[in-house]
Structures are given as C-alpha cells and as structure tokens.
Image (spheres, rainbow, N blue to C red):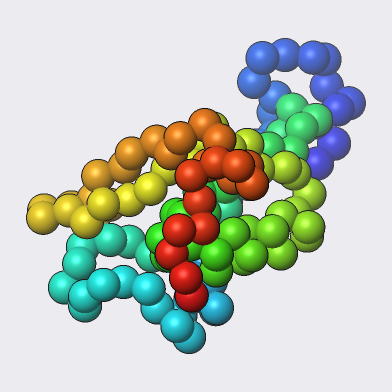
Length: 125
C-alpha cells in the first residue's frame, strides 16, 4: 500500500478491488415480492477499489419494496444516516420483473421522488 512513494502515473503500481454481495436483513424477514416466481435479483453489492492514493466505493443497493412506500422511505433514511457518502436521488431506479432476466427492466424514478411534496408514500405498510 506504499504506492504513494512512486511517481504519479495514470495507473499506479498497486490496485486492490473487491466486491461484497449482501441481502438487507429487514427485507429478508418481510419480503415485498408480489410472487415467488418473479425474476428479480434481491442482492445488493458494494464494490471497493483501493489504489492510486484513492478509495472508490461503487454501491448497487437493491431495496425490495415499492419505491413510493413509507417503509422504503423510512428504511432509506435509517441507512443514509450511517453511510460515509450521500445518496443521489437521480441514480435511484425501480425494477420491474423480467421474463428472461433476473435483473428485469430498470426505470428511472421521477427527479423529486424523495421530496416530501413529490410522488411518494401512496402505499401504506
């Protein structure tokens, strides 16, 4: 991890990357999938890269709850308090079940989906 001793270059002599896959315990205890045969991947991922004097985090979080539900809003607020970075609302997407792919179709959410005046919280717990 002493790559800072080397001259500055585009690709440093050391790079370590790994990925951590996980499921949110809360959603495993009370899953929100509408049926068991839906092809959606519920796993979240946190990619971490060290090198070039930098630490880079690349999260792909999957929250298996309706995007406009109160339970998701509360859960994201709790998680966000503990993160070393801030969520950017423009990167959130919703997943529709796929027929052939576990990923399904991904659609962007409205820009104001997390604002109190935006289109949210129409579904109850």
